[in-house]
Image (cartoon, rainbow, N blue to C red):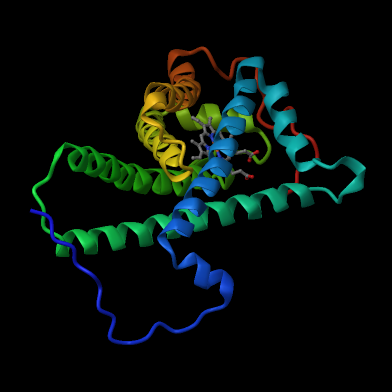
Length: 257
Ligand code: HEM
């Protein structure tokens, strides 16, 4: 039996500036999740491709890291464009998490009030949203860990600013750390798979005729990112990437934040 429950607000909602007023609606939040999700996915794909330079040696990847700081060439002061990108990325991450949190809270509250026998599609939707919740939390924790590990060098005395190659090696050479990277990237791939799938719903691209195409697209993109990102800890653990002949800091250029 399906009954609908409606929230009876006792207090009238306070009027907010129009942009926040618009953000109150679930539809706007779902769109924000989709758009910020695409931005984050773009970063993750670009980051994975950039990290492939690890296979071309220390000189390649360290110069690549350095060239990100020089984006914009002489037109823009050094690191400014990188900082603009970092701020945009952080904003996308923040709204993605906030919209996810508030939609989830609302859904859980609604589930508490609405009673129904769970038909198949509810079970599938519940499985997907549960997966999104735990994988999302793991990805969030992973990003904090990852920044502390490779960007700030908190966990190792061997960390050298700008020596991306040696820093990645020294981090992932320890198997507990390699395992963290492997587990987190599996969670990330699941998050991307369900996220890409539900993004199509939000954007209204949900004609059942294209179900297979949508599923294959979501699988393909999550699978490629999974393979690429798992390859790094596996390559270090397997000895494909090593420090033979490498002097710490050897290929560092002038380095700035
Ligand atoms: C095993 C896969 C990965 C490797 C080898 C890797 C490697 C790195 C390295 C070496 C840095 C520091 C770059 C530098 O300071 O020059 C870095 C920064 C970063 N990584 Fe990753 N990463 C991986 C996966 C990920 C994933 C899955 C995410 C996001 C979900 C991510 C997000 C970031 C962010 C946000 C930064 C900071 C970028 C900045 O300072 O501008 N990474 N990564």
